[in-house]
Amino acid sequence: MANSLSFRSILDANKLTGPNFIYWFCNIKIVLKQEKEAYVLDGPVLEVPSDDAINEENEAYRVYMDDLDQATYMILASMAPDLQNQHEAMNALDITLNLKEMFNKKSHTERFDILREFFRCKMSEGNPIRPYVLKMIEYITRLEQLG
Image (cartoon, rainbow, N blue to C red):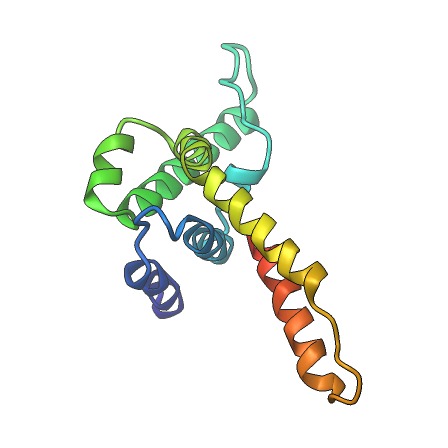
C-alpha cells in the first residue's frame, strides 16, 4: 500500500495543466502499470458479455470495468480543475483520446523542433566526443517521450 501511495504522489505533484500533457501521460502510464491497470488503456476494449455468457466471462468483464473506473478516477484526480470539469462524464479511454486530440498539435511541433536540432547538431573537429554524444542522447530521449 505504501508503495502504491508513493507512486500516486507523482500524479499529485504533476497535475495535468495542458502544456505538460506528454510528461503527465507518461506518469499516468507508470502509475497504472504499477497498479496493474494499464491494460485498460492499451488493450482491447471488452464487450458486454451476452446473457448466456459463462461466469468467467462475466467476472473478467466486471474486473475490467472496475479497473477502467479506477483508471478514470486516477486520471481525473491528476488534472487541473478546468480539465476535470470537461472530462468528468467520460471514461479513461475517452479522456485520453480527447486529451491527445487537444494537445497533440503541440507535441508535433515539439517533435519537429527536436528533430531539426538533432539533424543540425554537428561535432566540431578537435572537441571532445562526450558532450556531443550526451546531446544526441538527450534529443533521442526527448523524442521517445513524445512518442
